[in-house]
Amino acid sequence: METLVGILNYLVFFSITAGIYAVLTLGLNIQWGYTGLFNIGIAGFYAVGAYTSALISGPPPGSLDWRIFGGWMLPFPIGLLGSAVVAAILALFIGWITIRLREDYLAIATIGIAEVLRLIVKNEAWLTNGVWGIKNIPSPLFPTIQRGVAGLLAAHPGFPDWARRLLEGAYNWFYLAFLLLFLLALYWLLERILRSPWGRVLRAIREDEVAAAAQGKNVAAFKLQAFVLGAALMGMAGSLYAHYARFLSVEKFEPFYGTFIVWVMLVAGGSGNNKGAILGAFLIWGLWAATDFLTGYLPFTDVQASALRIVLVGVILITILILRPRGLLGEEKFVSRMLR
Image 1: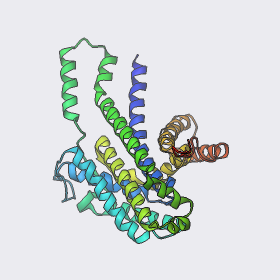
Image 2 (image 1 turned 60 degrees about the vertical axis):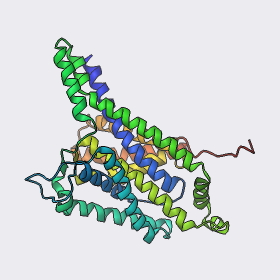
Image 3 (image 1 turned 45 degrees about the vertical axis):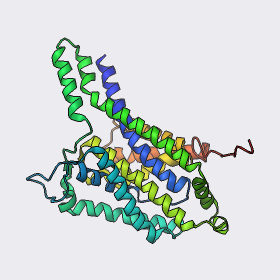
Image 4 (image 1 turned 60 degrees about the horizontal axis):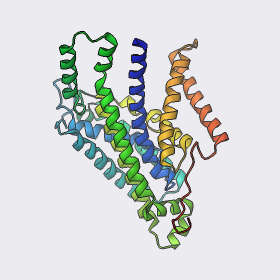
């Protein structure tokens, strides 16, 4: 029973992390899957959202902190909304400058901007506390749930050890339920938006910009709208991560974890398909976690094992693309009701 409880607790942690990546992947799907915007700066918007929410809803600077800004202790929903707004404003500014670039040039510009943002987070200690990070970020309803669990355990001292361990992880179960509901609502909303005339214009732009412009559509404006909406979702993913981890460090927003693996998730699951984006997030994160266990049995150093895990993920991605060139699910073909 103890082993089963340990497995359940790990699966909850795994699902929360994969759910946060699913929000990131949905944001990228709007930009690339539906509009064809080659954004390699995902980590930048992810970091901006996380630090914005931490500064809005987190604790004030401590006596040993370098930062002198933020710590307003506002409710979690305000931090979540603030992360989306700040990421969207930043994307609006970046997109206004770069959105007319072709795919490869846009990729170069966005990855450069993401690195600039990461270096700002790392070096501007007055704002982000630099390499020391921001700690003690409050999680929604965490004290209430913990007090309830502590009271229940105190009132029933005869609970077996496995039940006590399961109850001690009650907050993770709550956060997982909240995250899955958030993800479900986000999926429903995006499906309504992307199946609307606005979404059809995005797909038309992705397929042929010249033809879309010939139909009187403002291609640059629609591209900018998709870029801003996708970035807002990435900022919200950062907020969800910050309030779950309760600690932010610049190492969490390296290009591999913040950008590369998100692209792998979208391509593997199916670009242009929201269900594929969510499936890819859970599948690739599951494979990444599995490779961690597998490489632990091999006679390699930590650096070698980490490099081998990246190679294994690359091999898995290539295999999926060979067998399923459009991803596991692929883009859905929309047919009008009249033709049906």
